[in-house]
Image (cartoon, rainbow, N blue to C red; front, side, top):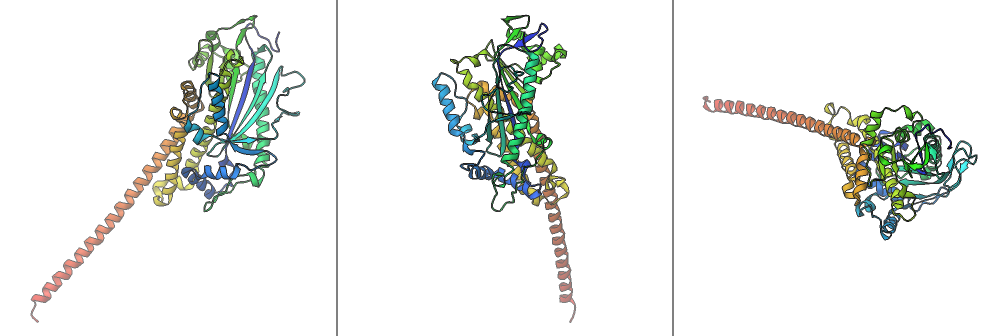
Length: 452
């Protein structure tokens, strides 16, 4: 008997959890129009990335030092290739999108009761059976998005689905509590807040007193769950086949972290089944909105190189959550910035540099999501496509694309109207000059023919 009732359904075997949070540094700016505009322009030219590296790399503090992760990504790929696995990332990804990595001195998880160090039990009372905290990684994307990944492993042989759901919910809450303290500590210091730019106003505000609700409102999250497999609750020696798992209420319950999973309709489960991206006949990869679930016993085989791919899969998730945070901030800026609203009734040339910066940032966003160029591994490209669709990235990109097109059209229209007015004014002036010239010529002629 496991920690929850099986009720004749399925049970899960061992599993690993990675919870990823992402927040754009733009949210930490002093609430000032010039600040926000400067950031957009610095991002458009790539200057902000340079400033971030100059500001953070090699700067040690009580919370650790930031380093480029490029060499570590390359070393990981070399290790995978040496063992017969795949090199997932292209040179373009390593060169242009390797984040900064924080070599933190304190990697504890904060629960409501205590600090949990790496490789320690999540709950010493035994309620989280076999739950172990495996660590946290903080990264800073090249365009200024902070990501945090918290990892846990549950090592008991069998878990009721209710236990899995509870473990996911509890760990996510504890992870966010830890993330909140990290933001308060790391970005509560003026020395670590962020870079400044010559000729640009770029001021960051201390986040020492940021509240849980404030941070939650600006944070995007995704959970990666890797499960060894499922077994029959009525016969714990019997493994459940893939076809039964992909259309089960148990799998949907884990995807949605819903303790009432047994109430899901079968037709809804069928829609989840259609999202399945298995590489092999015995594995499952499914992304649904804020959760990705992988079911494969290979990840627990120390001789199988797929165990290394979990880190590449997690990196793919982190990259997309960071893109979502950046997209959301960009879209908000386009809709709220005063100079970009009602361009039709304003002087277009004042807003033109900012609109051009928005166009450039859209191009950079598209490039950062082009996995045909960033990943050499075909299956990773398919995972990336699903993440973009399920996270709402595709829709957000289209919204920004439409907004930028509308702003460009507004400036073109206003410029055309302004040019037409100038042309009409010039034409009227020329007509006036011609009339005056004719009058003068007539007067001269009359004077010439009249007797003196």
